[in-house]
Amino acid sequence: MEISGTIRQILAHKGTEVATTTPDAMVFDALSVMGEKNIGALVVMEGDTVVGVFSERDYSRKVILQGKTSRTTRVGDILSQPVISIAPDDSIEECMARMTLNRIRHLPVLDGARLIGLVSMGDVVNWIMQAQRHAIQQLTGYLSGQYPA
Image (cartoon, rainbow, N blue to C red):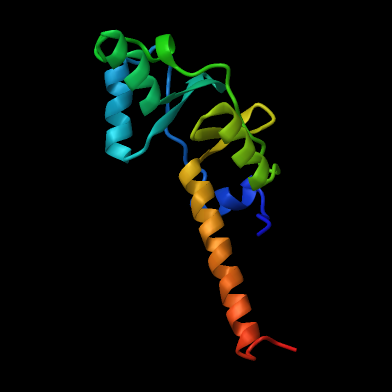
């Protein structure tokens, strides 16, 4: 099955709200925001510039496993860099390839240098499941004679 669509379409469906933090924030505070919002990553911003992504994986690998503490470690000391991002008109297939190649689960969506959204692996999976349901409905309609002539 061919996966069609763009990142812009995913954002139109899920929304463009992005939770952010700064490099100077303490990891504990960033984790608190993630817990309150039930999300797995924050985009790290310096002013209007995306400087990285802070994820649960960063916390587990760069704080816990290294014997650091979340209350004394700054986000900027452990965030994932360089920024790997996607453009709004890039394809969903390109998004999947970029996530897989870089072994990441969250991609900031940048229109030029401006942050306009965040796409997660879960967003992509939901899009694909929705596309599959639609294709099944069309095939079922065709096979049962309900498909328009």
